Length: 300
Image (cartoon, rainbow, N blue to C red; front, side, top):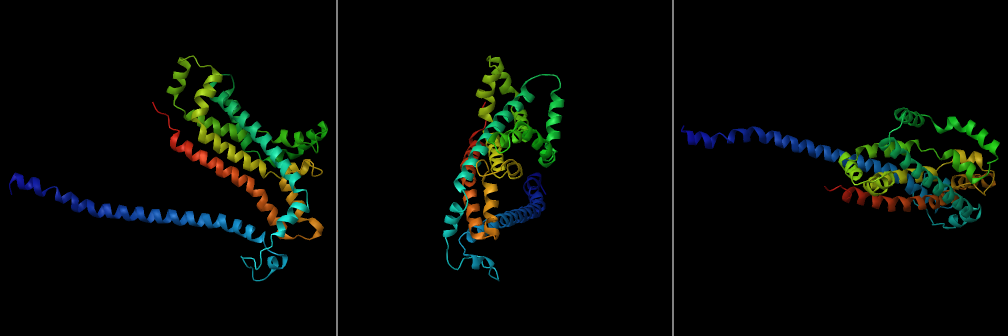
C-alpha cells in the first residue's frame, strides 16, 4: 500500500469507531430530553389540577360539591357564588387592605434590600462580614419564633389593629439582602472601576450602573416579595380585630366560617378573586423578566 493510499484509507477507521459513540450520545440526549419533558408535564399537572378544581368548584352549587363520586365539571354553572363572596363579607375592604399592606411592605423591602446589599458589596466598614453572617442567621429563624416577642412589643406601643402594627414587624429584608448581594457580587468589576474612574459617587454608581444591569434579579425579588406579602396570614390574623385592617386571607377564613357551615362555592369564588391580582402582576413582571434576561447583557 502506498503512502497516498494509506492517507486516503486511514481517516475511515476513526469514523467507524466514532459513529456508534455518536449514535449512543444522541440516544442519551433523546432520553434525557424525553425525561425532561415528562417531568415538566408532571409538574404542570400537579400545579394546574388544584387550580382547575378551585375554578370549577367556584361555579358549583352546594349539592354538586358534596356529590359522590366527585365530579370535576359542574352540572350547571352557578355564578351566584361570586356575588355571595362579594356580599356576605366586606370583600372590597379586605382587598383594599391587602393592596395597602402588600404595596407598603414590597416598597419597604425592595428599597431596604437593595440599599443594604449595595452597602455590603460596595462599601467598606468594620464588621461587614459579621453583618452578613447575621443576615444569614436571620434567614434560618422561622417567623413563628418571633411572634410572641413581636406581639408583646406591638401591643405595648398601642399598634394592635393598625396598618403599622402589621407592616413594621414584617419589614425585615434578610432574603432580599441575600439575593441582591449575591447578584451585585456577580457584576464585572471592570464596569464598577470604569464608573469610579469617571467620578461616579455611590448614588450615581447605584442608579446609573448597578441597578440597570440588575433588572431580572430585581424583578424576581419583587415577585417573591409581593406573593409572600399578599398571602401573609398568621401575623395579620393576630394583629387585626376587625375588617378595617384585615387582609384577604383573613377575609377568606371569615367567609369559610360564615353561618357555622362552610359553603365551599363562595369560598372558592373568593379564592379565585384573590388570586387574580397576583396572577396579573406575575404575568406582567414575568414578561419584563424574560426581556431582561434576553436583552440585558452588558456589551463592552
